Length: 277
Image 1 (cartoon, rainbow, N blue to C red):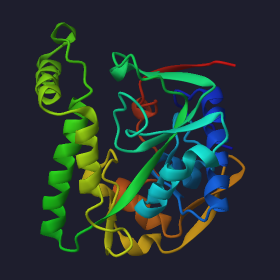
Image 2 (image 1 turned 90 degrees about the horizontal axis):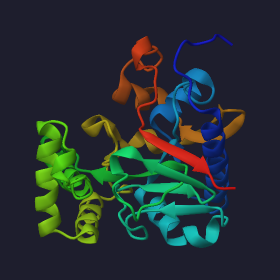
Image 3 (image 1 turned 60 degrees about the horizontal axis):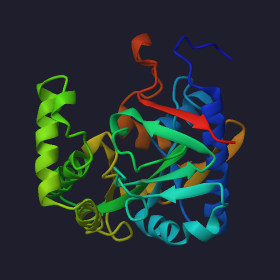
Image 4 (image 1 turned 120 degrees about the horizontal axis):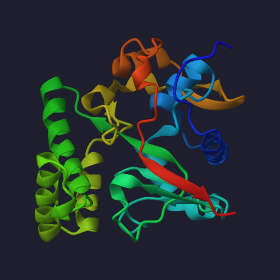
């Protein structure tokens, strides 16, 4: 195999994440839940046969109905060493998607290390996919509304200590965070956002979206891409992907087979972790 010049990811971290993904796959398969690799995990599977060499996380997507079933039953379906963390069951939880975390590890995300009640573990990210309107102007309008509330949920958890602001952008976030925290409660803003995301059904819509994805409106897809799934080899194990993965990836990344410039072949996450065993 050709060696790719990059800043390599932590192999131990990747191994822990892969083990969690294998358990997740088995649970979904046993209970007939649909999931599919997305983002850099899917690119890695297609382009590298596993992890992108510098990548240090795993992302999967699920249709909203399957995602909600998983949330409801996670405590009895997953082994004790794993916990499905989300805003309903986890204090100071930042995101509007879930993280399947390894309880035998501790992971702290540096941008949110001021959230002292939040103790997470090495994880895989699980994103719900929701329906969208059919017409472009309605899609853009609804996307902007939902995205604005998404930003509010993030601001609710930013560090509002004005003294730590390094620039005007940080200062602005801190001020907006203080305002948001004085008006909204953590759980209420998450619940409102969750309700907005689910306004349009995945099952009955012609278009679907990952509202919580990092690529914004580029993660809007024709629903027919999700009709059939197939498996692909990822680190010598088989996992599900959408059959037309080329269209799926091209909509988000363009030429996804082209390696990024050398300076971008680094992890984009800012955290530290340790094993507790």
